[in-house]
Length: 250
Image (cartoon, rainbow, N blue to C red; front, side, top):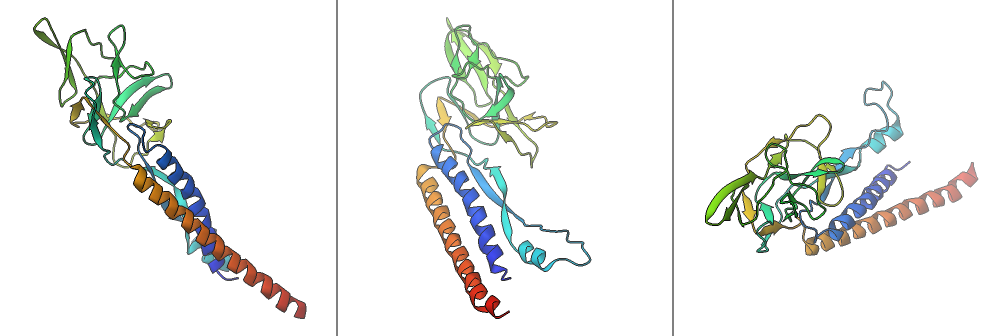
C-alpha cells in the first residue's frame, strides 16, 4: 500500500486539530493577558522500534509526524496605557498570582481594583497575592506602583508601603495548565519562585497574538486542510481503480 496515504491522513489529522487551536487564538486576540497556543509535532509510533521484525505498515506510518498537542506561547504581548492606577502590566517573563476558588492561579491580566475593604483584587473579587502569597490591603489615598511591584499609598502628605505585588516564574520546561482564557495553574509538585519582571502601572498587556496574524494563520490552516483532503481523495480514487481493474482478474 502506498505510504503516501499515511502522509495525507496524518497531515489532515494534524491540520484539523491545528484548526481548533487557530480558531481559539483568534477568538481571544482581544483578551487581556491571553497567551496564544502553538502546535508541536511528534513522530507516529505504530509499533516498537526495537521489534526484531518491524511491520512494513508500521515503518511507513512512522515516517510521518502528527500533531503532538499544544504549548503555551509565553511571548510578550503589547502593553497599552490605560491611566487606571491599579492596572498593571508585566514587561518580561512572569505571572501575577490570584487566589481563586480553585486554588492559586497565575495570569498576565493585571486589571485589578480595590475592594470596599481595601483588598487588591480582580474584577471577579479574587485577591491578588503578594510575594509571600498573602492578600494585599491598600488604604485610601494616592496609589503608586513601583517597577518591583511595591504598592505605596500617599495620604495627607504621608507615604507608606502597603505591600508588594508578587511576580512568579516557573522552572524552564514547565507546562502550565490552562484554566480558562487567561489563567493558568501549576502542575502538581511544581513550586513557583519570585522573579524580577518590571511592573508598569496604569497599563495592561494584551494578547500576544493580534487579530491580523490570527486570521492569516486560520486561513493558512484551512487551506492546508483542504489540500490534505484533496490528496486523500486522489489516493482513494487510485485504490478504487486498482480494485476494479486488478481484483477482477484474480
